[in-house]
Amino acid sequence: MQVKDCGMRIRVEKELREAFVQACRAQDRAAADVLRDFMRTFTGRHASGQAELFVSPQREKR
Image (tube, rainbow, N blue to C red; front, top):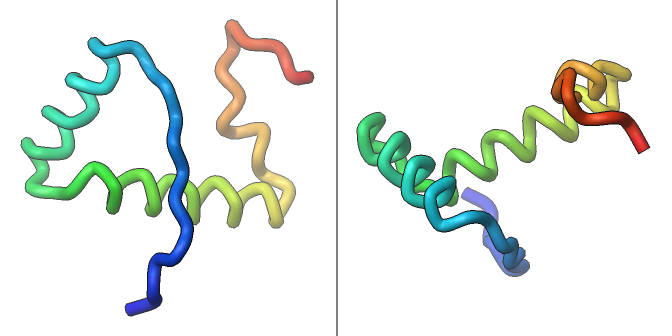
């Protein structure tokens, strides 16, 4: 296991956070582990040119 020596703070709507935490608990997973998995998947797809798979239809690319 790698040492986690960096943090990230984000602001989200209360309802979104509560729904996310509840979904994580339903799968018996820590929210931080789910976020780290997402970050690994996202960065891996970005590196392989598949990042556009994460762009939602209602949101424009910058």
